[in-house]
Amino acid sequence: MRILLGVGGGIAAYKAAELARLLMQEGHQVRVIMTDAAQEFVRPLTFAALTGQKTLTDMFAIESAIEHISVAQGHDLLVIAPATGDLIAKLAHGLAGDFLTTLYLAFTGPVVIAPAMNVNMWMHAATQANLETLRKRGHRIVDPESGYLACGMTGPGRLAGLETIAAAIGRELSKRRDLDGETVLITAGPTQEPLDPVRYISNRSSGKMGYALAEAAAARGARAILISGPVRLAPPRGVEVVSVRTAAEMREKVLENLEPAGIVIKAAAVADFHLSKVPDHKVKKTAARITLELDPTPDILAELGRNKGDRLLIGFAAETQNVEQEARRKLESKNCDMVVGNLVGGETGFESDENEAVLVMRTGETISLPRAPKREIADRVLDEALKLRLALYAAHGR
Image (tube, rainbow, N blue to C red; front, side, top):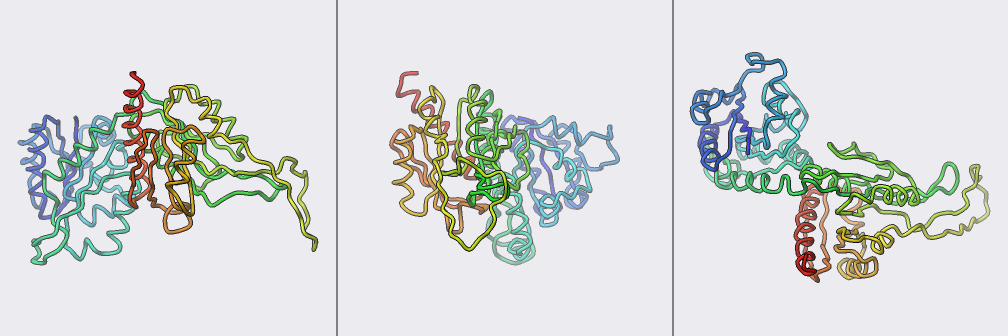
């Protein structure tokens, strides 16, 4: 693989030379980008000698005005080691003032970040908030080790072991294109069922889990089609987004886009009831009680379960109690291959940036996913989905 190695300006910069050598020994091509501060610790010639390629340092001493774009497009993975507190802050906030940070904004592949800094800098609320921002983007953070630091203090902040960083790189590279050629159809967000031209029934779903799944699928090479209810989220990069409002509209668009899909993930929180006859004008408030007669919305998941063919069908069960039992019941009643059960109403689930879940499988297996950012949970769901499909194919002799 073609790896970009970004080197930040800390005392651990010298270890990046050994990391470059280790990656070269594993058969990867390595191109190094250094910040100005990094060059105060290690000279660019060191990396050029190790990699056999010119070290990139200066935005204005390059062959082309768009070299940062071409370099970004020509590589499979970006590693930043060591990543200082200053560099992490720039990445989190999209500040692009040198070759490395500008290239970062142009890079669309997986990113591995290995921080190294003083223990107090590492523990500072600003640093932790910036790291959380990067995790939510799907970047893999290789946490520093605890030990004696160059400043004389002891605690977390020392650059992770090179073998640990290399292993994280290997995991990113191995999963990166495992959905090449696949079409993954995902639903996300709530639906809004109108009561009159200005009011509607809905729920607290933010769409964050479905959007994370779509982003993860696209990052792994899939054609990701996202059928989204009304949310306040930016479209994930590389994802085809189809916007809908009601359950009926979501059903229509799901069926329109179903044919090419090999994996269908129903993460949307579709309203269960709707008003069949919506008034043409706003219903005025009075002192009298109003009774609404609501009809069930179309059960999209059940319909897909009856007509899924060879597709892998994954449903979601948002519950306030008995999560595993309800997920298992939904698996059987809707003919799913996997149901992702998660507890809502607490610190995770709806509206949260984090989730924890239990995966109930057609094979009878149950897997618990501990609390983590939704983007991380998304990758775990896809990991287990691919394993499940292989198991189901093997069971049916395919």
